[in-house]
Length: 152
Image (cartoon, rainbow, N blue to C red):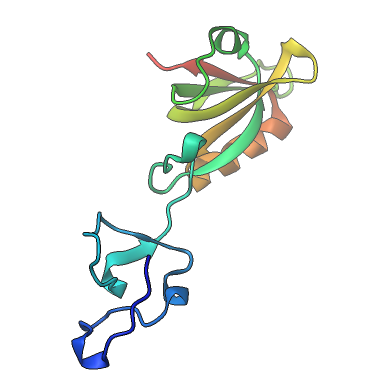
């Protein structure tokens, strides 16, 4: 961005008067070089995923401890793959635990082995909706196991 001083009557309506007005905002579309920057051309900055790529709208990065990541770690399938997150709950009373898909086809942003190496739980960073993130964070506390499986 370049700051130019021009008479006010030459500036189009909605043009930014100072670079500070653009702080924390991102352009909604590509802008021609040398054009005026208008307030209507800016919006909230999108959250960034791996390698600076924007996260899908409505998603935020959340890190959870997961099982079953050994194959993904061995093949290097971490960033960019979609995974299903499966939760197995603890049994209640004399009954058995329940297994269900807690989040389907979520983008896997990063995957790192845990402190026990490839045999123990891994740390997965996923692009989740707020509801999915809250559900999986709670599952880390009460579930017997949280597993990720590659989609497909």
